[in-house]
Length: 68
View 1 (tube, rainbow, N blue to C red):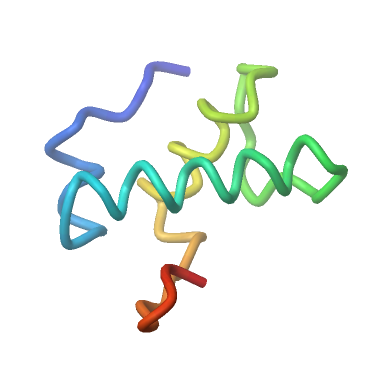
View 2: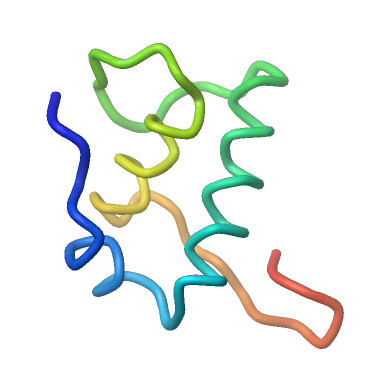
C-alpha cells in the first residue's frame, strides 16, 4: 500500500504538529499491542498510524495539556 500524501493527511488534522503527535501516540499504542484499524501491507507502526489517520479511523481532542 502506498503511503498517504501529506495533502491527504493535512485534510484530517489542523496542523503538521497535530499530525506528528497523533501519529506518534497511535504508533506507540500499536507497538504496545493495540489492534490495527485498517488493512496495511506495512509492518511499521508509524506507517500504519498514518494510514489510519488518512482513513479517518483516528480521532483526537485538543486539551490545554496536549492532544488526547
